Length: 394
View (cartoon, rainbow, N blue to C red):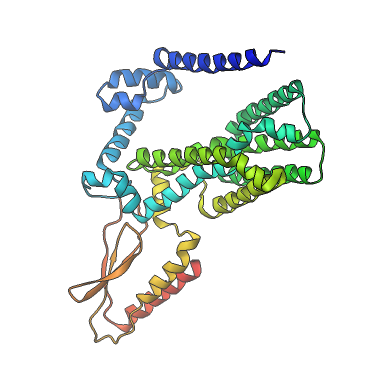
């Protein structure tokens, strides 16, 4: 074995050389992004790269046309199905965070939330301080620690390859894998925490850690980056992915900075049980908010988030709908209902007429705005019947 003064130098050298190799491969081997080439007008080069990526006989011209359409939607800063010409101010982070439409807000909740959930599993902290955990479990010698570390890393790599197939399997999909991954992580951490409580063996600790990295690689590892790319629409993708990445890395830094302090305060068993509880919370969040994204286009996901009602929105949506039910006589001033692609909004006065918005279901290029007037009891009864059905659905 290497001496203490040699081991860290070898580790540092390996950490410097591998990134350099990757940078060289990225510069001289990896081709340019076809999307970027098309955007800057180098379509011939983009077609050559796409021809290498797609199966023989694929119509590359249609692929290029699809990329052109995507770029036009992104540059127009519109959701698929929306119309208009927003100003450049709508493309800022301030607009994304302070003035998002209901659909974009739900996308952010899901995309940023799933990316953040990856770090609330404790994966970064446990991997960084894995030696401390093994030592606390009774595995003292360096050779044993190194052997167990290599075995755990091997399990992680193998399961990631398996997860790549399961994520696209027609009978599995993303959502069940992410829920099952968090439940498995919680069970593994619970086993590890109980092992610490009863003063168990190092073998049980290693088994718990192997199950932990296995369940992480099976779902939350790749899924935390896959889901945001599938839920964010083109007009907000760049900024929203930046927010998702920031939330992930920020929580990773917080976890690494506070792990030893939490470990000293809660103990080895306490910190495992804390992360187990967070994993259970992740599973609940994903079950309530995340739709199945496998096989869905960005347009499909945009329509879903336009029409979705998250659990915490159901109560306020019910109160808003019921508050709009007119209670005055037919002779009083009629109320006007305007359909809006931005979802339900609160009523407001406009020249004496009160307006409210109902959420339409977009079809293809978008549903035109619909204007109706409630002028008699028959229309009022029909509206109340529709509201009752909507309330039952909620």
